[in-house]
Length: 294
Image 1: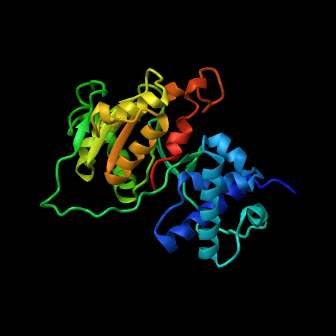
Image 2 (image 1 turned 90 degrees about the horizontal axis):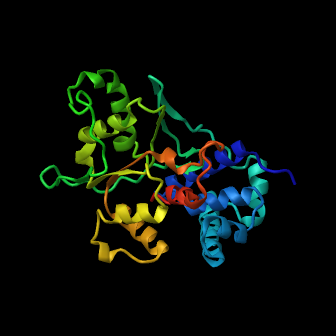
Image 3 (image 1 turned 45 degrees about the horizontal axis):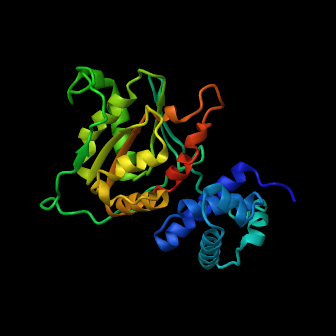
């Protein structure tokens, strides 16, 4: 049997995701997407479990629920055995092509894409919004943020006059479209950090928590989890096990509307290697990015 092409897989999963959301109001989670991707490539549950650091039993249970939901939504029997064939036959046709949102200004790229580079960037469901009378000020932690040069730290600074379009685009994607992950890409010194910090002032009233976290020292994922969790609870309340830390953070992110700015992400990658290749001790970061809640 021939192997499904990446574009076929991506388009099929996008189509499935849209149909399930339309029927249930819930997007596929990161594990479900991983199961669909791996199954379409002929991989078995043990391989999926090993790759994403889950137990085989957990993957099997998640897959069983996924196939059942997909079959119910489509009115057709879909399972591990026939999914790959259905993808190759174009059964999951997508009439609404997915758009890649990229703003290119002064060599600074802003990219929002649910299936970009293996990082899930789904829209989040709209939570109940408090009335204007009950809205509270967000808890903002900018302890890690650098001091920005004069002109960038002023809302009326001339340095941002040419960035209004970029700021408004970011606000629309984050606040209106509710994208979970937005990437700012550009060469060093183009003002990515300054743009992010300026954006905070523009959209802060839409969040309960705003956290700036630098990755410039290539911290392990466990260290990053601890740093993020300390914004929500006392250090002694943070679980000891890695899995517990990750689960607790995801719980908080589901309970609260949070804006987390991870700066210097490039420091996680191996220098001199292919783009996107993580350092040996940091290879579980993609799992973290994929697990952001729906």
